[in-house]
Amino acid sequence: MIALTTSPLTEIAVLGAHCDDIAIGMGATLLALADKHPGLRVRALVISGGGSEREYEEQTALADFCPNADLDLTVLDVPDGRAPAHWDRIKNALQRFRGTSDPELVFAPQRGDAHQDHRLLAELVPTEFRNHLILGYEIIKWETDTPQPTVFHQVTTEFIEAKSRLLLKHYPSQAGRDWFDEQAFTGLARLRGVQCRAEYAEAFMIDKVVLDLGGK
Image (cartoon, rainbow, N blue to C red; front, side):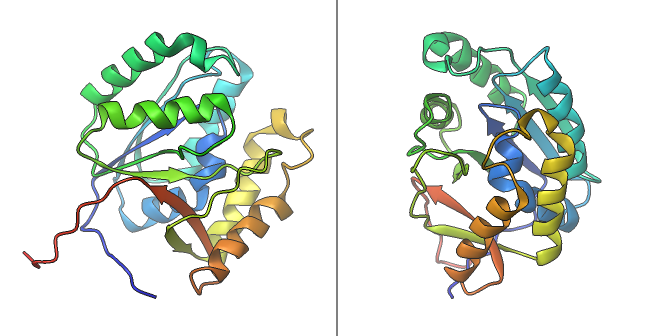
């Protein structure tokens, strides 16, 4: 397996349409990054759930998913499922968010997501983070929109087990969903691990990357 390695990270930006999107899509990666880069600045923006129990769930969850990190989370109150009708507000919020962050990596939903809120956010993020490497995470759910990923982040069993445990602990509002369980989260991570010759992995989609092969 051919690997590309980043330089040490000091700041990342993570964006989600709903509270729990970030943790579902890249929870084990967050745990790994916080472990490898103590003091990492994590700038997070979620566009719906503000002022509800879901905002509290997100605050407590991301605090546990980003231990020893400098976490700054903003949760807006755009109505769930209505993001396209609030295009201007989301675009302006992204512009403000971009002005307060200078990340080396950006994580957001992937463009092929079937949910309109996820898809709109995925389309808007590159309009503000124009010179950044953006990794699109996948969100397991009822729709058959599972992508064919091109980027894999190998993660340990410890981090995958912690991800599942923290999801179930911090998002009780989602417990009634028939796909929201440990087997679903672990099963997808195992599949992605098989695809990159690891036990477990989280996978991402990428639109554009510039390679420097000169070895500066």
